[in-house]
Image (cartoon, rainbow, N blue to C red):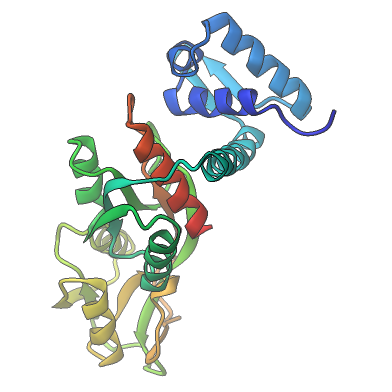
Length: 286
């Protein structure tokens, strides 16, 4: 028989979300030994190790990360098929928070698709900075969150990782066709609490690049207007490129890493409705 067993895939998701075989067992209504046996069989079918086991729990191997993404999609489709055939509708109120850096076109497409497929879900959508979203999520004030993480060394160490939605490059941006500005770099940024601004300023300081904050915008849309107006230079993710804005490749500017946009991982004991809604959001954005 080719393919994967749904129960084993469901157990894999539970193990990696919970961080250990023991913690996953009650979530899938199995004993710890049964969970271990299912993972052994899944690795045997996959033909390679999927988990790295240690004293602190388990993490995914690269193959395990790939299969985890497939498993989430397969299980979500299975649940959707069940609801469709059994007439079980997704309904309720959902508090969704999205980082301001996530491209607006994707957000509009997401909301339209969810409204068409799940008209009985009432969405409360808020745009916030990633740090604010993560703090609100920890306090239980947000049901589903999409945040941005800068891929600097050690940035994800010890940090729970939810499903990856997209990865983009960070770029230095200026008005299209504008030359490199003379003197201190006129930096355009969001307020001081913005993690991306903090990163850009740390990077410029480490590389001894002289700069001065020339303009502070309240959101990414305002920042784009300031860039297109020629007020200075900003560090933004690639999807923020827009008419009138171009990449600035000036000598002396330090290279920039990528960023990842991820759904925040499920919380222990989460309402099944929230899990279904998160799966629907993930499908809509892939």
